[in-house]
Structure formats: structure tokens, C-alpha cells
Image (cartoon, rainbow, N blue to C red):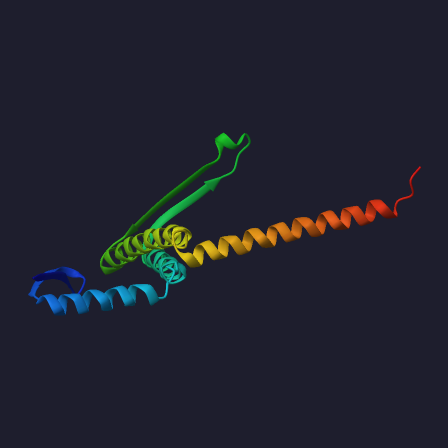
Length: 159
């Protein structure tokens, strides 16, 4: 029997495994799958790095740039205008653009982490338990509000 697996997360490797070893490996994998702990994707780190990278890139481009800028406010707003002309040369231009590109890629990564993080808990037992707990909490809050309303109405004089 041959076993196909990942090598360092990249590519595949092929290993010969006898039947008993294959059975033991499958049992261990199933046991590990049953007790594994769920780790949610966090977008905090990539988002912070993205903002820092974008700010650093723009700072380098503006600090070492030569140019002019102007802003005119007018009524109606359609008459307002903003003109900017900046020219950055040398290593600052390359470094600034590299940092901007890195910041944009990190921002996309943070967005992807945030989206995936919203849907990770749906199919798991833990996610179902959390949803059930939230539903019960909301039901309890509704019942408490209804009791408060009933108490207020019972205090009012009839007439």
C-alpha cells in the first residue's frame, strides 16, 4: 500500500506502507481529528501590519518627493477640486512603492482572514453550542422584558 501525503505543505511525497502500519496511522489520524482544538483565524496581525506598511510607504513617497498640491472648495460641491503633483526618484520611489504593494497585499489577507473567521464555527459542534447558547440568552432577555412590561401594566390603575 502506498501513502500519499504533503511534504512541508508543498508538493506530495509517496511512501510505501504495509497494511498494519496503514491501519495504525489511520487510527491515530482519526483520534487526532476527534480531539483537535479549533483555532479561529485572526485578522488583527495582518491588519496592523497592512496599516503600518501603507503609512510607511506613503510617508517615504511624500517625504522624499518633490511636487505641489492644491485644494479649492466651492459651492456647489461639484466645483470643488484637488490637484496633486508629486515626483519621487531613486530608492525612495522603489521602497515606497514596495511598501505600498506589501500593505495592499496584507490588507487583502486581513480581509480574507476576517471573512473566513466569520464562517469557521458554523459546521462544528462548538459553533452549534454557541449559537444555541445565544438563542437561549435572547429568549431569556425577551421573557424578562415581557415580565417587566406586565409588572408595569399591573401597577397602573384600571379605569
